[in-house]
Length: 133
Image (cartoon, rainbow, N blue to C red):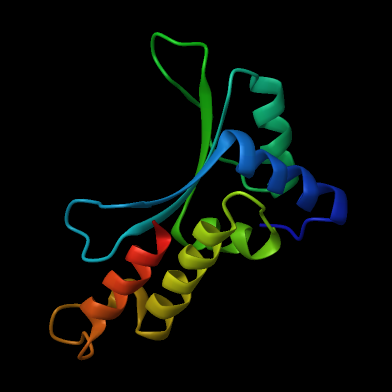
């Protein structure tokens, strides 16, 4: 992911606040929530522009039966993106997602398992997730 300039930060921030989403997804066979950033729009050209600004080649997903497409970033890439923007409407979610990412990284990230998980880990993750909503 490349560093965004001031114009790109503003553009991406506004897009996330309006037609984007920040999510914590529950994923099968995963102990912790997956952090996700979604951009959704009917304009392929606009989503391609967003993808070019971010500098990560991700496929556009077409939603069957609609004219809607989405661009999706997960976990580390989502966190890297969220660190570069400031939001208005979804700032609370951005901060909670980054807090979760930082905490998981400090505890060993995906390499952690049930035997290496520190005491109080589940409670801390639950508290962060609750602050997200």
